[in-house]
Length: 122
Image (tube, rainbow, N blue to C red; front, side):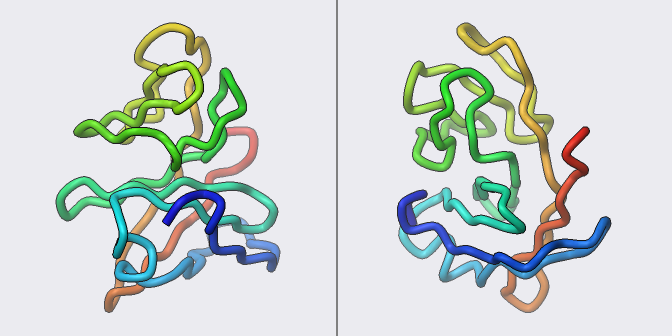
């Protein structure tokens, strides 16, 4: 699923709330990344083996959708300027990135993917 096919969940999320964003099959049936929108925030979901990761989907440098980027192990490469982020920490790994991105908690229960949004200030 590309970011242009992102699922949208418009309801506002309460602090600490787990939000269902789709099933593993819906989100990752066509690839290893997906974009969703939760409470007005674009979230990129990434699958590495059996592990799922969630980051803010907008690159901190070039305003591109990370879910449209190339996944290489635990690194997602921005499709615009090829900067990479570590999926496990959100850390910016190389130039031209200067700012880390925000990570969100993600879990799977009975095949359904849930995201817990980090605070906007995190």
